[in-house]
Image (cartoon, one colour):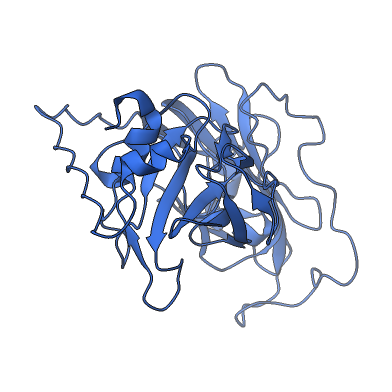
Length: 350
């Protein structure tokens, strides 16, 4: 926390102070590259008479001759983990002035180059403001100076030249890695298919093909059928693969529906087959669906491309097999892993 009493302003010309910003006013340049600060770093003088800048007082304070903005409060952690910078708590005061124009610059100590510039616009004086960085703002491990500048509508500046820079030091560290576990948790065995439905070997004999046409794997326990999810259990088997890998129809059938679910399956397609199975293909790449409702498809027909739409955090296909109809009364999902393994190695299926 720093403060700069107004009475001692003249003797503190070289001290560092801070400014305020609000997320709604912030604009960020997070390119991470060198960006020289222009000679016009201080934003243009106050535009528009619609902003109540001149005259008047705030909080009942008597009007006095404006001098320059001062930071009366600054609170910021001195250290943080790599990623989004920590929040700032700031307050700017200037008697007789309702708003000041503020800007925050994050400078790398090692290169002396500005990495982030937040142009805050006109912010209210006399108020403690919490600064939240715009989405996507991130810092790598290293040392940084968070410099704040401001000017009022008379042109009196907080940041001017090199002597009146208000700043705080921020140390960013790389999060400690978790020690590797001695053994990986076991992957549950595939659940046998229920009685009365085609076996994996029977589907291979019918010409079934693997639904992902490219390098892939089945992940770990969290990718399995029945794995815990937020409020429900996983109803399919994840097939992890690269973004854009073709997703194919395992058997001949008809496309029952195609749609999009923002908080779940993302872009998806459902195929109805002639052997009592419905197949569901979730998290397709955006704009990659190549089939439409009611369209007949042969085994091996490309349906979409693997992606990470919806609630997915990595590219993959969430493949589901339903007996009795997808999402239909009496319908239910079964573990697809035995079928996927049989389709992956058809010569070994017996």
